[in-house]
Amino acid sequence: MRRKVIAGNWKMNKNPEEAKTYLKEIIPMVKDAKSEVVLCVPYIDLKCMVKHASGSNVKIGAQNMHWEEAGAYTGEVSGSMLKSIGVEYVIIGHSERRQYFAETDETVNKKVKAAFTNELKPIVCVGESLEQREEGKTKEVITRQTRLALEGLTDEQVENTIIAYEPIWAIGTGKTATSEDANNSIKEIRDEICKIYGQMTAERVIIQYGGSVKPTNAKELFTTSDIDGALVGGASLKPEDFAGIVNY
Ligand code: PGA
Image (cartoon, rainbow, N blue to C red; front, side, top):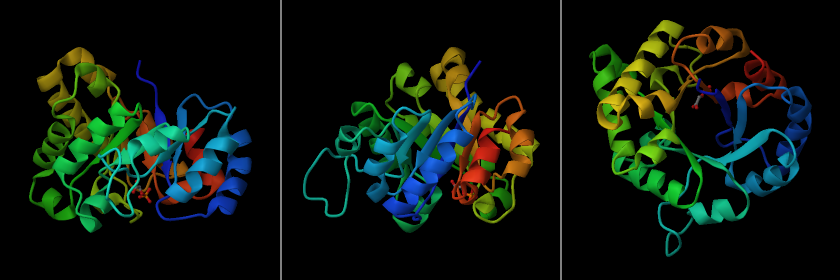
């Protein structure tokens, strides 16, 4: 049985003071969670979050990283820097980074490899736009993004990659994919992994759904055959909403 991973993605929200207050509230609310609980927060909050989450079951992740270890890359943060302060997870290739910050399948792949070099667990985002969906290209887009993100990884690394299937039209819009639709797309991603890495590996990969997940739709999504948790944006900003999803 795959475990579920429920990860919050705060995006560009909350300063360290606000982050600390949030953690104090959320920790007791999710202490009995059966799923892995992760909060992916702005760089500036990471150190304080790692410190204050220590001893709890809340794990901390970043929202991006550079693939190089160090060097003349103004404004960037490397995987080894994240590792050095106790960060465990990192989101890679979120659609907002692909859309606004020129992230490509190639940079996603380099970052995934660099994450493993630094013993960070990557949460790799894939997903189709509304236009691609309407043109019937969903399967083609998500299987290609998955294949390219995982290129050159060992079977063991693939097993330890978390994929977040996030249809772009469902992000921050209040429109959730139906649980059946989301589950089908996730099965297509798993089938693609199976074709390349074999069934045993494919069965072990955690594949989340993301896009307007709320306490009210979490249970329906999480009781399908293939959805292994969620990447939660807006609803992760309030402790009671995020806890409602974690304790679905
Ligand atoms: P949302 O965002 O839950 O606000 O739709 C999800 C995400 O972007 O990861």
